[in-house]
Image (cartoon, rainbow, N blue to C red; front, side, top):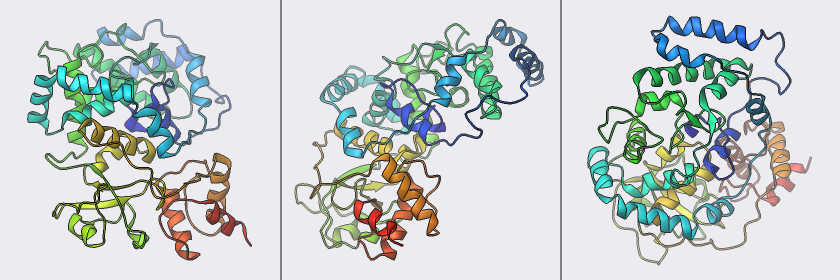
Length: 406
C-alpha cells in the first residue's frame, strides 16, 4: 500500500506517485552485480517459502514466473514529484471527484453506517482516500502482482522487503482470498481499491460481505471496511475531527506553527485563530497543531490527532493534507481560502540547492532530493530562526538568498 512509501503507480493514482518519492533507494540504479539467474533465485525462494508453512498449492503460483524488466525500469525511473499543496489539491479535489464521492456516500449509506459504527471512521475519510488512491476503484492497475513482486524481490535495491511481500501474497492465495490470476494491480505489487501491499492486505483485510473471502479488488464492502480497519490500526480516534481550516492573525508567533507543536483548541482561540467566516473557534480542549502547508501567506488549518493517521497512510505532507482536505469537503466544508498573499514555491532544483545549503550549515534536512518533507521543513524552521525570518517552516526565495550568502 502507499503507506509503505515506496510506490509509484499510474499518473491517475497520485497517491502512489508521491509515496514512492519519499522512499530512498538502497542501491544504485545500475545493474545489480553478481546476480544468479532469476530462475535459480526463484527456485531457492520457493524452497525457503515452503519452510514457513506456505502450502504447495499456493507455491504453485510461482510456476512459470519470469523476470519483468518493465518493473525495474519503473523503479529506477522514479523522478522527483514536487507540487505545492494548492497545485496538487486544486487538481485532485475536483468538482467531479467531489460529486462522485458524495454519490457513493449516499448510495452506500447503509454500508457506511455499519462501518462507522464498527470502526468509528466516518464515510468522508474513507471515500477521500478511495478517490485519491484509485479513483474509486477505477484505476487499480493491470500488472501481474506475483511477477512484479518476484522481480523486485530478486532485485538488489530492496530485496528483503519485497521477499516478505511476495511471501504474504502467497499466503493470501493460500487463505483463499484471491487466485494468482486475480492478483493484478500497480507495478510495485499494490492491490485493490485502496492499493494495499500484500502485508497490509493479509493483516487488515476484512470479509465485510460475508462470502468467506477478503476480496479488496472486486468487493466494495470488503475494500471499504478494510480501509477503515487499517485506519483504526494506525490510531484513528472515534468522533474526533482531523482537519479544520482557520484564519490566523498576521502577528501570530509563527514558531508555534509546526506539526510537532500542539495546543488545546481553546489556546489557539485565545491567540486569535478563528474560523474562515470570522467566527470564534468552538470551546474545546482537543489538542491541535497549526498546519501551514504553504507558509504564513497560504491556507491555514488546525490539524488534530486524527490528521496524524493520514500522515501514517502516506508520509507526503502534500498528499496527506490534500486527502484530509478532500475528506472535509465531502463532509460539507466549503472550498478553502487561498491565504493572505502570493506564495512562490521553490522549484525542484532550488529546493535541492536549499537542502544542500542547510546541510552545509549543520541543519539536517534529509537527503538533497528536491522534496519538501517534514525533515526539510524542520531544518527550514531552524534556519529561519537563525536568520531572524518568520519561522513558519516554509522555504522562500528570501531564505534561499540568505543561505547563498557566505
